[in-house]
Length: 442
Image (tube, rainbow, N blue to C red; front, side):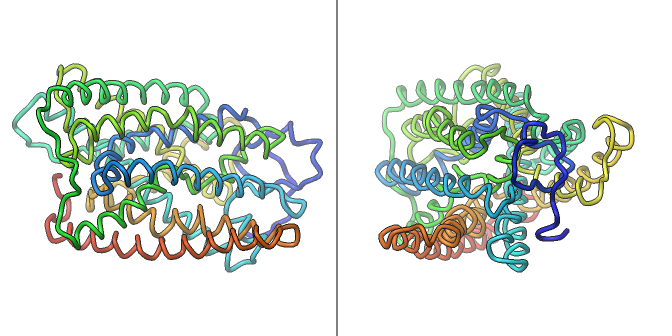
């Protein structure tokens, strides 16, 4: 694929006909969605089943003060960094519908390849986490009804990956999610509300709660640093330009509206389940909150199945940049998205991608480790370091000395945090590798 290929063919983008900016060729739809739909796409990731693990992966290692401050500071910095990226969507007479296109336009071919690599790693590891979550939610439903335990977590991960592949084959592109985003919002409430209510009841009945950060001094240091990566992981997609590509004109204004929606109303359910879950169970909070709650069997069943189904939808969002690349580069898709040829292509190509994802998820089902490692190696560089430096490179002649200092400060601080959290995440994986074996039943 050429870095700055002469992009002028617009696919299904009637709203862009009046624009003077060039739009790259893509097999997927662009400029079709409202800011609210983009906001729901962002919120789907924010309130995905990952949120059921943040009480354990963020609050437990940070405690009340560190956890609450960390969550709100991470939200503020994430919103700011994402707005910077959103403002660079139309630069140099071109509309940059892919993160790598934007980086390549600003820095050149090597940066294009590096950004694509970082983004691929980021999204691939997020997708691995979603498949693990799908398996965990199915297993949590299974153990409610049986004590045999003949089926292990890797079996449920395989089932979850298979369902995700079926869904991916039937939904051709990100804009086609439309009604599924509404379904996702309902499903999120079907596991967040029960998790909050049951946790609240357990917390009221609990005589004593321990909020001390567990572990010895060295362990506390590494888990605290690792939790910083989980903080930024919670808020960021690593694919903002790809989501912004689906938005109608005015693109920048509408995308910023979607971001405000994500970081205000969109974040309330996540905060509720994090804070109530941690309040109820303290330092013993499970990495998957629904494993900690007690209550009616049918309520826990509905919550776990809702978490599973929402995970299927959320994974599709974070896999869409890979699907767009494959469809545009190799698919040469024409006609109806549901035609036999196009459907067969998606079944084979997306099915293969998800088969690899599922295999890795079953091999290494350490969800907390993946969250920390993803945040360290790719979320920090993509969302904070690269966003600030790209904005600095494009706008440097228009920035004051104070603004230049601010952006360079962000770059330096987040570079140090990225390095520190990477070391902590690798240590965590090394420790867990000694405790658990491949295809572990966690």
